[in-house]
Length: 251
Image (cartoon, rainbow, N blue to C red; front, top):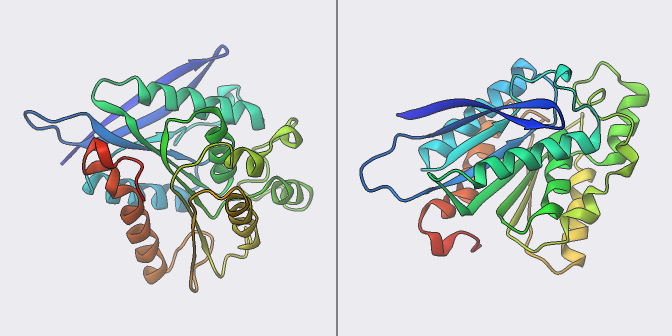
């Protein structure tokens, strides 16, 4: 069993919607470890929502609380643009960190696709991220190309205006924490070369990084075997945070 809570965080006159799902509490429970899911602002497609639901279920089953940014948000939230998306992620991260039932020292972040770019930028702003996962992350160059040639594609229209000011690869290496970068080897929407750029930057900084390419997996890890492998690896990576406060950031 789990509990589900919808909440909103005020930011610059706008409202950032989010949800929090956590294991059913029991007597004497210590504050829970949590994972923040980022996808970039804008409404999720049905396929991405299904992926996020399955990720959430797997992590909650592993004993973690899961917060999801703007799962049902639209651009009407007033926070369009790259910096606005990072600001929204930062505001929701702070909300999670200040919750009494959640452990400030055991908060992970997972960014998918465009959200991987946002999560990388967020990682510069705080050293309190215990573990970070970039799942099929986009780079600024890739988003720019999508905007120019594929405006009907989900990530393409969501970062505008100040996109060029974002520096996710540089931001990723400011703080050292266990980092997992995972990509589908058959991803034709966000090519695996994007995750290689992130991995090389972390390696050059001599920080902790694990890089996985999932065989025959597309952008959504939509095949049964690919989806199972994705969920298994995410659970393996974040589950140590649920074991004890002393293990929060250990590889």
